[in-house]
Image (tube, rainbow, N blue to C red; front, side, top):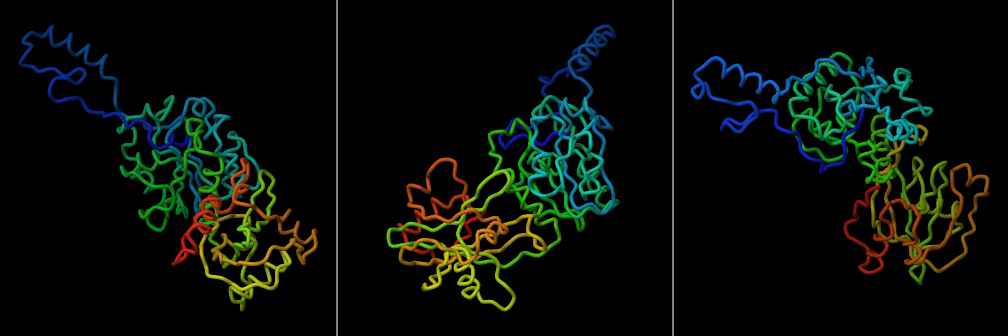
Length: 378
């Protein structure tokens, strides 16, 4: 099974023939009176017009069960997947790696272990059955009955979510051009979510961009609530910003100090506690809330993610001296704290949360705090 290629691939070919005589194999009875001519034209028409009826079975079987957390729906089987009889079997396809990286699965599964992911609450299907070299080789007729089949799956098996791996999987099923993320359309109580394609043909979309959409679906489908959180953009008189580094197995991410709001705490109380723990900063005047951000993840025990409010804190320059020990910080995944100048924020290879932090800081320094606060995305 292969996810759809990136948006912008050529549209599905029409399955109909032209009614003006230009379509393959079309001819008028009035033009040919003798039987021999009609037979010759029939043979030519059959040769030029292959059977357009889509297959009723797929080379890659559905992997389904009742009450699943998410059913992932790809577009159709590619040749590698069809030969293996397994979903997303191309070794260059990132689907299985993304499941592991975003916490959908407890380990990295191979395509030939596809039935084992049912134990993780994961199912697999396709929007179209016909095997093709690429999604651009599909016709609109290949998706005939796809929406009805998904409705039957939902009615019989009651999954919580369907995740379409690529915009074309959703478009093929419903005839609508979707945006990535949660869709307004639902199938009964089942919610629909569109993910970027994981196909090698979509390699131009960075891993981090695909990972962020899988993370959001992981968080939303967990059934857990969002935690309330606060962070501070700490800025000194030289317009440097103080950031903390979170260390993950596959990357390092720099973000603003802060964290969750405990029950009974105000935003300011929580922020003063967090800044003292992570940087040693205690004396400051809390500025306005400048940004909001929702961070979805399956890696936060008991929570689907964190809904954050980010405040501006102007302060004198200081050397970070966290009140927490290095062991306590490491338990929270924090590896370092440092000040960044604006040029240093643009150094290659750095990953920030939110991702467009350098541009946001530049806008803030140049134009002042926004009002009202802006949603800065992931």
